[in-house]
Length: 215
Image 1 (cartoon, one colour):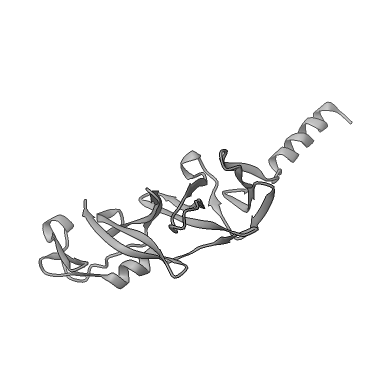
Image 2 (cartoon, helix red, strand yellow; image 1 turned 90 degrees about the horizontal axis):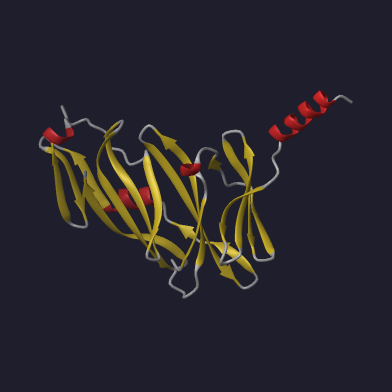
């Protein structure tokens, strides 16, 4: 067998290597996150916690540069005095679009269990009133009214569709899970940020506080 054939075979095997690779780690807690590269996606995730390994075949993350790489954090978001494992995965990024998701895993005796998280878009739609008026975009957040005039939104009629679907980013801040959603009037024109802060109640992380920051 020629050296050229062996070299080509080795290159082909390397290109098709889908063996799990460590993509994130919490060294102090002895926790590692593994996944396989499948083209534009990282799939078949597994999480090693000490001597135990847990598998999450349904998880996916964009396979791009370091800005889209999975992230591992630990924080006590449930308030039980013990830190949970937070796994942040990027689902979409680019051209004004950004979406990530978070999986929160809490320790339960000899295993881990995922915490249910209320969808921040449902929280916003349930608790905020927003509409296009002759004067501009009117928001009512926790009984506080905010008006973005037409000269700022460049609105020409009252049939403008407002969206919160193109930018959804979970983040952690001082043991509090937050979700940042951008209010969009049209593609790429963001009017402000809606920040949802979560509280753990009845076994679910529920969005309770909502803040609006104009851009």
